[in-house]
Length: 286
Length: 248
Image 1 (cartoon, one colour):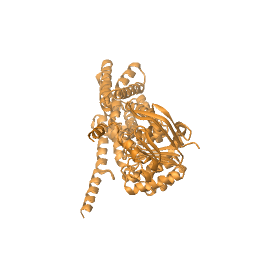
Image 2 (cartoon, one colour; image 1 turned 30 degrees about the horizontal axis):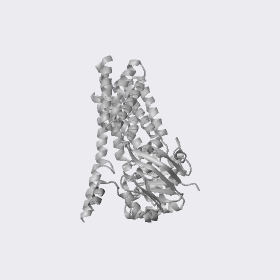
Image 3 (cartoon, helix red, strand yellow; image 1 turned 90 degrees about the vertical axis):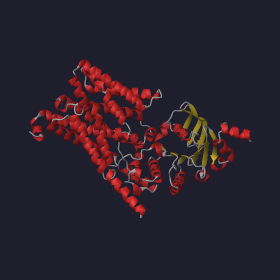
Image 4 (cartoon, chains in turn green, orange; image 1 turned 180 degrees about the horizontal axis):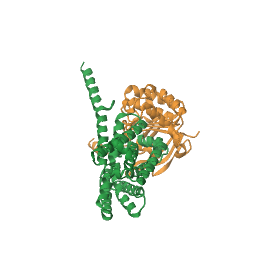
């Protein structure tokens, strides 16, 4: 049975498809702001730091994203606190805090659940998406999408010219933390499709690809979302057809798209850049 | 008449060191003022403290008799070139359009009126033909003109420019100063952090000579005097100076 037939036939595959497409959209959109604000490393850290929160939520029987937001934000605050109150630089502080949070999460999960569950949280298991998970992802997606649409102007100006934003009275520090909260929510939504370890790829790679393709932020947002969806759906197809790990397949499709843009993008692509440089030196010699 | 800017006894610390000590300043409306002084004199710090971007140790700053908070949307700041990410995915036109954001408030996006106004401001600085370009594709002078257009779009009464001529070619610098003079004649009050002493008296109505404190302030010709400049540019306690004096 091929992928298309299977989608009509199997309920679990429909859920997987819908969930991973949604994850592709929200990771792609939030990712644009993550890369434009130079927060790629922070994004990686926060996505790992949700692990203890997920474990504790499971223990308390509350929705995953509540614990995830708490542990993500606590880690972010701790990172800031250490770098502001010692000679430790931010990147070092990130390295210390997120690995600690991650390690703590691993202990919690292996202590109370099986290592299979840990494996699924770390690497995703898209074919096991339950109806409740699907709705949670759609809910988170809606919140993220709405936040970006409503606060587009504020996100744009605070990412582009923080000083001006601050001068005219935008709460730039709050915007930073709200983005971190959205980031933890997106991570939770991505747990089952790509897993904690690879979610950063879904945040950064489609956004970076879109960044090479356009000079307008709103185009970048839509392009990144579209690239996220294409990666998710194509990755799911490959995963189903060849029986491979879904998260890894999705991530590698997005890498392939990035490489295409890196070499072939109309303005920023390596090939055209080289050709322009060559044409210019030719002219220069004559 | 209420002065455009009134600073009294402004003190600022930076990394635990006194950066500005008890600075006083009164600028009348419609003046083009240059802020000059050596590297590390605290010129940018002074401006940032006036705009509440960094915290002060003490002192007050009033704009047209009002607090910064009441006036903040009518005050524009053009940052130093190195504070901007020139690879950011934004066009010249959209950069200028940002100038309309402060008065729009939350949940309202720039409409037809704001876009027309942004276009008028772009025309005023002569950058309209470049409106669809990404900002990194422009020359240094063109980039500064775009940010000036953004300040115009903000309908700001008071403008602060931090080193606007750094990395700008001579022709663009002349065009920009002509534009600034025109704006000042229209009644805008403009403060420019400036590095190069050579044309200071030509460019500005008034000069503020700064080195951790106000060394001199007033009409350009009266401030630009050898004695005052020496006071600002030569650190009186520098070891080498003392040694030179001892040798002489």
